[in-house]
Length: 144
Ligand code: HEC
Image (cartoon, rainbow, N blue to C red; front, side, top):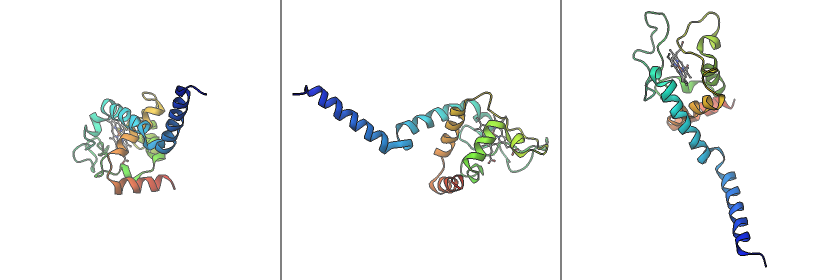
């Protein structure tokens, strides 16, 4: 007869595998990414986009420099109007590089300062704060 502990270990391994399959990206792994993203956001983005993602005052109008202030990342802004691909490009390369044509912007690229995992995590954190309607809209345009 097999010792009991082998049977128990086997049962636990099966249960862990099943839990992993069921949870997928929405499980503990995803919430770990959101926590990482929150820390990355507070260290690298909050000074311009606000600790509560509220953006800079009068963000819809260019300042005296002719450049736009930092918009909010909550549902009052337009971050959720853009696909994952577009947002990841902006965060990695900066707005001027993505828009092109000599466009000037105060949004720097973070491709050097952050890893791609940190950039994906910070976007996951921003997305985790959106109400259902905005989150669903953005998911739909990202999957087109
Ligand atoms: C030095 C200030 C500054 C910092 C730091 C900064 N941003 Fe920005 N960000 C801006 C400005 C200004 C804009 C608007 C640029 C424009 O429209 O020309 C912007 C725009 C964006 C956009 C596009 C939003 C949209 O709706 O089009 C995203 C996404 C973004 N920032 C993410 C981030 C993330 C993530 C970080 C941190 C990793 C970050 N930003 C750090 C200033 C900053």
